[in-house]
Image (cartoon, rainbow, N blue to C red):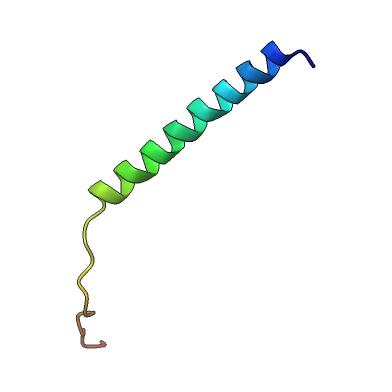
Length: 44
């Protein structure tokens, strides 16, 4: 494989990896916080 093709593949994979990391970071930032202690509920 020519070296130019390898650089293009590395660049495309790096862009997808950066996009995935950004989406995970945004998901964790916007996820509602869970209380540290679970709330006890009465069983019915």
